Image 1 (cartoon, helix red, strand yellow):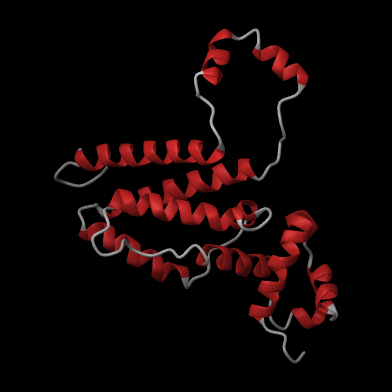
Image 2 (cartoon, one colour):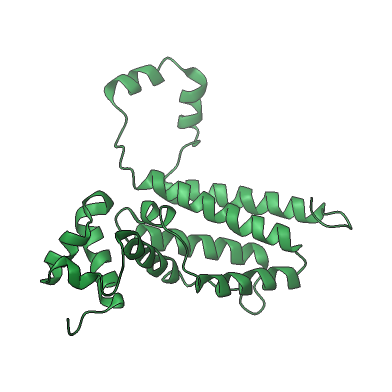
Length: 208
């Protein structure tokens, strides 16, 4: 169909995702939204998974991944990268579920290589650079999965139970639980501090 392309399908798929969620997204429904028959879409994406992979790649790309900026320390870069990634995941309904269920596009590997190479230049062994990026990515994915689960406020029974648990109650009262932004930053700071400790203890022969 004239005007139909892979890019158009991905953009429309993301709009439909925001409307119906990942469970409601289907090739047939997307075709209906675009005013075409389902077979017309298969000229551009062979399967639903290929569509989801393209949508996930678009979400990741929109986060603006890339190596540290000139003069930017690696801790600041890790924090900035994780915040941007979380924001991108949150920009779409079920964004984290979409990304964690998709395959990475081959083209994304070149950008990943640039990030790893930059980390190696500033002193990271290649293995630690890879583990660091993957760990921060996994943390961000998991955090946003919980954010987007929409579990809701505690039930009356849970509130009543909390009153019988003095240590947990004190933890809540003294600020142990914060808003999602603060909780995310706490976890991010722990990951950065842990990475710094590991980096400082790397033996001469490299990380094991």
